[in-house]
Length: 222
Image 1 (spheres, rainbow, N blue to C red):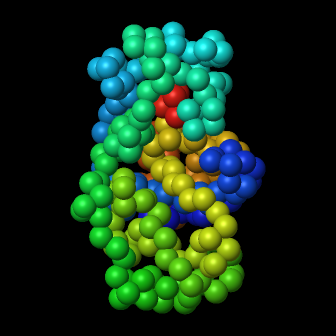
Image 2: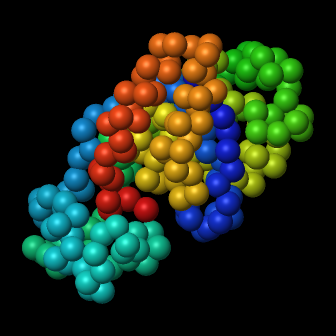
């Protein structure tokens, strides 16, 4: 379920000025298949945990403050002294998601697109502008479905000029990738909003807040 769509300003991700963050409740309903995050593996066979990669860090900067490889980081494998080449599946598994093979990914059909646009009366989920495009909130490479629940109508600006990410209220570990949004503050506000109308959800959010946000399980992901 889409709870909100928020803009993250600044050049935090892939040098894009802004990102649109889809805040979801139970991303599995959108097709996401979670697994235990898997460390990267070098071509030489070495398991590249953050601790192992720190040994091959030319700048000797500790996680998580080092640069990612895509931003010029210099993380060598300490065993073979090579910069690791990380493929699509390794990146996805490192995030704790089961990757969908490219051959199995299907495009959103015209009828699915039209149904999604009609659901919001052709209005962008982020602003009041006319929606002309449809975006999968959970990307297909992560298992994101073509079902209505996973389709977000967007205007031209929020489709073309923004990067797109998602976070799940029920999985606070993933919020470390969001730089301007505090999970605990957001969930507290959400609990207060639904405290008088959704007892079950309030209980779930109270339980999560009592446990607190776990440590970042993805310290080597920018």
